[in-house]
Length: 472
Image 1 (tube, rainbow, N blue to C red):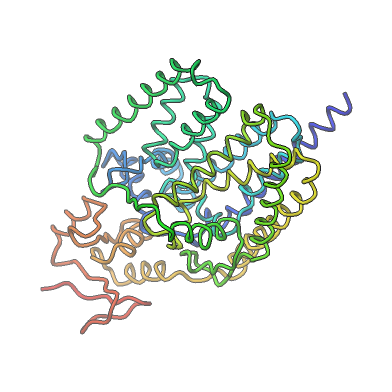
Image 2 (cartoon, rainbow, N blue to C red):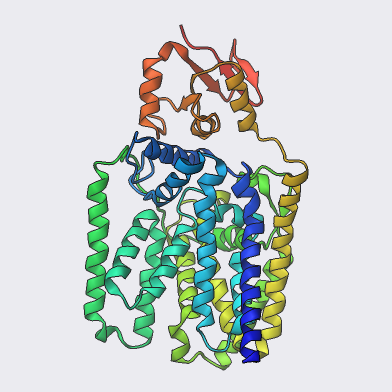
């Protein structure tokens, strides 16, 4: 009895530690404008439209993909507490906590892990680099949502109709979520039970198709459902180089990265090459150990194996389909690969010969990444760096500007920052998101300023932009 209580106390403390780490690494991006842009602003403006009854947004305005799940989650917070950066991102933070809870529940059910092994396996998600921390609470692009959907799929694997429904919503939110269903099918195949699951698989497929088709049809009556589809490339050597040379080091904090290059307002750089070297060496050691002592088939039927399949699936999708593999911002397209690392740590922990090395590598990675998160927190606690777009928004309000046109990455960001007291849009036909903004600007054309990126005669310089008076 005493031993059980001690074990429960240790488990509770370690789980609490993981939640604290999530809070620490999320504090700056959730509480400040350290990482914010027009894409995120559009989702916030969609939620404001929903609360005000001005619209019924189902997909990101101007798009035919990115189901607006997060918009419907933050709308009640807007209604109760107002539209702020915190109420916008709080649902994303809550999803991070939910992911930790699901990982904890799933991994603790596996034999040989215990609370310490489970904690170690979750650390790559709970304490990633500041770059990844910002992306995991980013309110656009379906960054954290796929984690929730693929983990929910694991727990619903014996409930085919519910599984299909969740997978359908997840797929429309961000197509990466489909990797979870593929991983479950692979696990069934490895266990030799596919032939016994024909009916459940069919039920899942029907449920999935019903949700996808139904929501697509419903979206035709939603607000601003138009625009481009998702972008895809094709397999190439460049994709492989981009994954291993650019994205993976950024994902694990395995190379120096300037935060400003990732649209994070900061003077800091985070990440160390030693982390990448240590992780690669550990992966080689794990591969050798698995060759000498292959996994038992039963070991391929738990959460750790599922996490590996999902993470590897995400990496494979990137290398097969990414259209710009070396683009710094597309690190969000490999986020689910973190789950492969979590699963591999769990698998390695169950091999006593690898425990010390596994613990050393994960602790090293956590220490380096957490150090960057804490430095960023210290920077914003002591001397928050100024953000150009916030200064521009303040300047427009001071000058009494009511309507303006600008480039995409300025327009909706400024509209959000000013609480829509300044209506800023791209010119009609150029990356439009807010249809009602276009109508407002057309109705007040004589009052529409232009926010230019380059110097122009008669235009007033503001920060790094130029404010040009309305054309008469």
